[in-house]
Figure 1 (cartoon, rainbow, N blue to C red):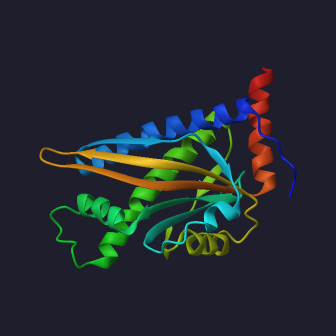
Figure 2 (figure 1 turned 180 degrees about the vertical axis):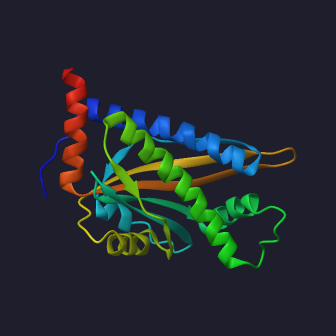
Length: 205
């Protein structure tokens, strides 16, 4: 693994990309469910595999998006199982999804698709990178189990993990939901180096 040092400027730039992506995702999700949705997140944090393994609770659902092009890695959205069901039920209102596991999974994957697409579109435009996300695949279990499947799906080295806590606040006429989850960006060293070089070019212009 390459020894890559991130200073405040790099973190600020990556967080700005995240804010733009979250803003776009909020608009898309609000239109999809016809409700007011706020999506907020913590500052991006560099994590180790050990940080992920400490969460042994198995009641999580993850959507994994592989990324190709100028980046090799991916994106994971992880929510508690009951929170993913709340989101799915909102997306499928009127379709009687209670007992339809396939529909619920498809709805949750669509949420991940919107979030990942919004984030990577922002990253692509901000840093002039060609980024091609795949169709998400779903996994259930502990964070560790979901990450193990993600590594297999991405078929490459996962050397750097960026994480942020995400909060969905959904407001309808007679309802309010606060749904928390975690989002992760997984990269190999060459991809992270490429991103940092583009950010450095911006700094020296």
